[in-house]
Image 1 (cartoon, one colour):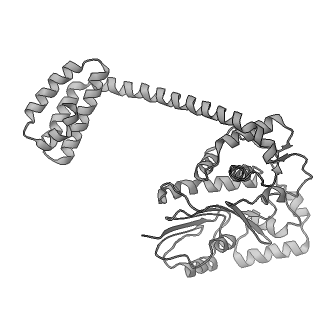
Image 2 (cartoon, rainbow, N blue to C red):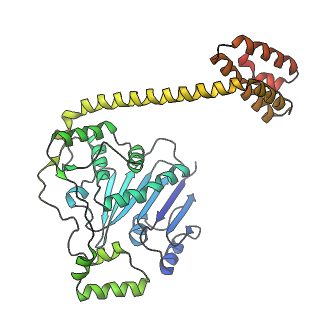
Image 3 (cartoon, one colour):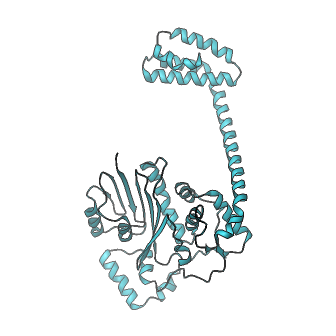
Length: 372
């Protein structure tokens, strides 16, 4: 049994200097390392460092999965980005590593039972930058997702502030996160009902004021920033804020309104019914669209049926497996088209002629046996 592991880390703010790249090269001699990223795959081996330490030192987003089912997504934020009342709602699948500069969020799955490969990992990774940006702009819905996921089997978890976020309209990144981490959508809908029915706090979207920040810097702050720029050759806004921050950027307010298990429980059954109805309506709409598209395609095939018969014979004349596959595909499409137009008798006549013409091609006839 293989032990395949995938690591991918990326810096969103600034670049990796030569010293950082050398340190990363010492961790893995085979990794693909650029000025902003690190990527490596392992079989029967492992990274020579703890992923969370690599993230805290060098990167802003990261992703890991192993073929035995472990998955970790990493998002690093400047210290104080998230209020403690929200940040410390740790669950069995969510952890926080904190330093004097950063808070590293780790969203973990111990055993993922569905098929997952590098393409799935790369697809999900594309959403991490957007999710990080949203968190930094005051959109903290990911924490509520993890709270709901925990509540699904643990109704004794601590309450989290009830803040007026939009859980009725989820973007692609949030939907991808909800799908991977199996966030119960019925509970998301129940949370929307709670927010519509109960008082809550307004969501805040803090705006950075450069002039105010600069005027409040001490000489020691400025010297520290200049020293870092001299040593590293660069300094991002987020790094500068983390270095000079005197207190949490989102200092906890005295929250009055809280999301607790008791607050959401009365809405779950109604939310489940609404979700099932919406899913049924969405499926019916999808099937209706597919039906129209299929009928349009069959009409096109029927109108070009003479060319399709000709193409089928041309492919059969190639006398090879790929030609027989193509001929079979044409004939099955023709059968559906004639059937859709109520002209099955005409198909049978042409098909009988086709079979007679190709009666020595047993491999082709086997592919068409279900049309006999």
